[in-house]
Length: 90
Image 1 (cartoon, one colour):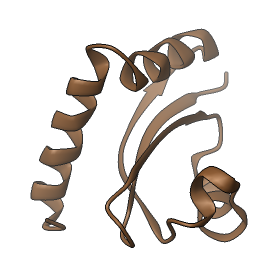
Image 2 (cartoon, helix red, strand yellow):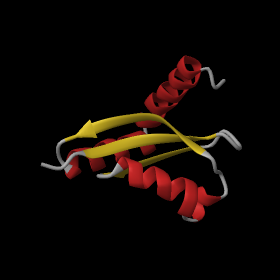
Image 3 (cartoon, one colour):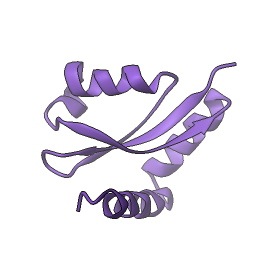
Image 4 (cartoon, one colour):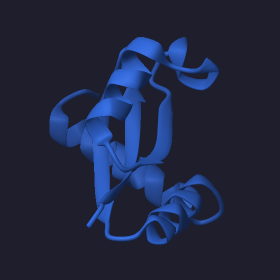
């Protein structure tokens, strides 16, 4: 059975954040930090602030979409602020 991850990254370079979904979190982190696409390559290095595990891809996609728009944006901001404080980053 596969697991799917919804994750929030934080740019140590400029404080930006990125939310995504994957079935292989380690490979995705390597990709963001070493390969990267236009949306993430200029903001390296990224640290993994938060992730959630889901049993189905559809659940993970739904959660990712929620965190990226509407009321979910406020929840994502709260998660980011809590993690930054807990990890002593900010």
